[in-house]
Image (cartoon, rainbow, N blue to C red; front, side, top):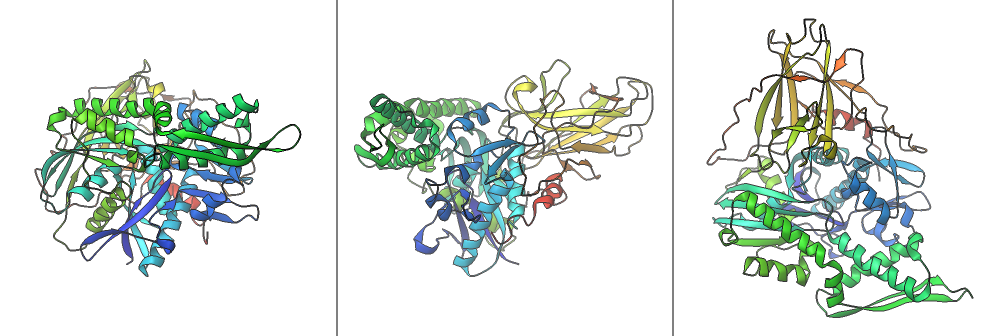
Length: 595
């Protein structure tokens, strides 16, 4: 059995940590770095590069360098967030058969799971080198506001990297673990996590070794790269005004400006003014070179990004209300994530709270440290520091109603785990199949939420309409991942269910991916076993003549397990290896072997 580590899979940088001798520490690599850039690339020789090697060549190879893949994972190609990404990222996005986002790199098509698994494999390899031992288990962190599909995709990426994923853990919860373990605290804290690509805020009660999340929320499209983009746009506009040259169509120039903008932003956390100098960014009509050479002040930076900081404060206010917590009831605010180092962020938190934030955790290392503590506990290592985590659902999960609205099954901030059951009935005589779509999101309309899966309950026994009652049980596990089973209430038999990897029938058809050198799986319909199957992939089931939407019967809510006041040990909450994603990801195994 190899060692277990905690992995903070970040949008811009990732890191790993381990517990040794009862103490957690960040794993450092050659050269003393504690982080690995979350970047994947293929160079002109066809070699696959990950981490520092990939980032070094990004300016000269922007179209074949993939950064911030975490923003895309588990998303629908037609979502508004993907439209934003297309405007600022330099690599090419392609629509898959299931409306998932694929990435084209040097005429090869990759899934986001493949890209993320390459980064996770790199982390695993450097950790093994640093530790001098095999690493085969990990807790991987995700933003608290990730939905079911995104969480499942991260779990799939971990399996592709050859890791047993012990748990997918929310980043703010991991930071709270790093802050509170071993201190015997009795506090209510808020974790303000502003990282490279996402923002989360969680209110957490810590009572000795029990960590209970009260409310959580965030924005998976707000982070440090958005701050960089504001500076980049300012530079582009200034250059165009000065020279009447639009550099926004030059991908190499855009990548160089983006890197310079990030460097300037970081420098302005410690100085009041900095210089952006990018030589030979373009040419004059006579062929002579043009440089970008301009000064950026902290005041100007704050003017450019002030609304982004205010968006985080507005979210904090909303989550405090949802938690029923006044500002004075929050004992400490932890700042996590590299972007939280910005003086304006710290100043606004201090103004909002009436006191400065805590210095109790390292902004870059806290999440990885907390993940390692969780991994150590879940690996079954005998110790006296086992903890209990009680988390909540970040956003509602529900099913479609005939009027297009969402019937909510699990409310936002629902304590986890939980169960619900609903009874579906047939709407016509001798109906043999029922279709059920499952959505997640905060809108009242299904069309504005993320589709998690479209299930078909097959081979229903023939009977007059309304006489067959199918009881569907929905189970949300402690990771916030949905599982589903169904049975005939009259006979007690399990109802066979299938899920096709495709889109909802009202979505537009997807084009074939271009030149898929990396083999992608064909669309396949799966039959669910009697055990729970994770409802993880958006899509529609095969349309049959007798297939109809369900008629909702009287809701039968299964009793939800009460939250324990305390537990002696944190049990593993990892989803079964027999889950749907476990089967799907076997298609991709070996694609990055040796990479």
